[in-house]
Length: 167
Image (cartoon, rainbow, N blue to C red; front, side, top):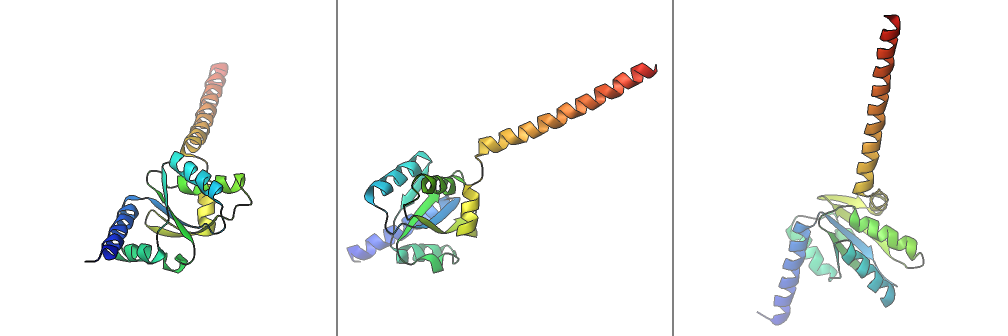
């Protein structure tokens, strides 16, 4: 077996492993981004616990087909970077959104996403990235629950006071 074929098989198996492990995979078009911006983007991805790789589109396509992922095939043209998120499905999209806000002139665009074994178009991925963090959502939920409990206590107290006044 030739070394080139062996290398391609290794890359396909690496991509398959990443696809199986990840909870979110985003395809981004990075055409026209300079080295400094890509370095900053990679740094942000590392801080967020996200992998960013560039593979040959044909090798990614082969790995995806072996796993039965056909939805991404139409987006595998041109310069495609692959973003793999493992723990948090929102983190890759949020990192890209924040990067685009901080570097508005950088031509980084999301092509599509494959999140929790389902296809998402670029608009849905952007909306996902705009969601607040998990901690903020929990705080919002707790605030809403605390307000409800406070209102219930106030209502019960006023019923008690009304009963006492009648007696």
